[in-house]
Length: 77
Image (cartoon, rainbow, N blue to C red; front, side):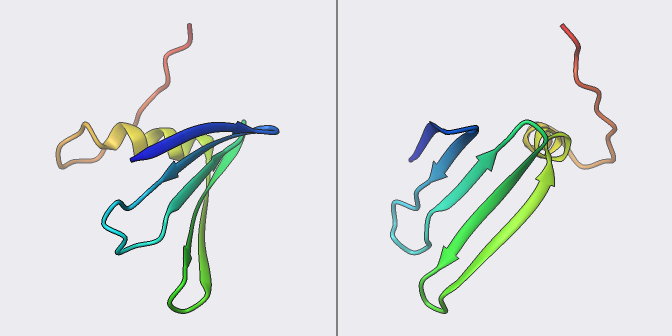
């Protein structure tokens, strides 16, 4: 299950682990970068991965690719 919201100047995707085994994952997307955040209640740590918008877009595209090396170009409309 996931939610998609707008919070101020960010798009926020929250991914919920319906099994309750893992904590929620939050993806905060801005114009030029995004953060992937997960808090771990067992040790009190918060893990954050920051990447550019281009890297995030390429990560999403990678779900549909097979093994290999790719250089992707976003279509301009």
